[in-house]
Image (cartoon, one colour):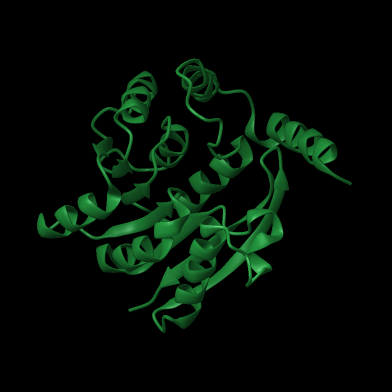
Length: 222
């Protein structure tokens, strides 16, 4: 049991329960052609986010880390016609590619991409009096995950879901002595989730085409 088998199982499940989608596969291809790193969620994980948004009845979603817009497209497709997804992206080049992918997906007006450091964009969102979010997806620089969690709590309504990707790090998250800042970032994030009395959360370990990792899922209570 290893990466080859995980990838094969993912391929089988994608063909069976996700299916071929030219818009989404085109978004991946366009991102690769533009030289973006191939670190977007897998198809099965994208469908999982889509279903979470539907189950949640989300009308407003906040995403931290747009990359090529792949996960934004998955989640935005779960929104009602008057829904809105705000995605924060540090790189202007990534945002440019994502905007084109979002446009080809027919989601202009539903997906809004804001460019700049998230820790600058988040306070501006708060100052603008933005309507609280129903779901937050964090998939950006791991060192700032704890700060992103603080903002997710501030900007979300009671009952909102806060989901964070890449929190298992191939199992390294269990190593308290790790000097990897990404590991320390996700450890601090998970510790903050556990310590916050308003958050009720868990972690799901995942294997697949993206290797061994995991998702944190937490619900914000009133």
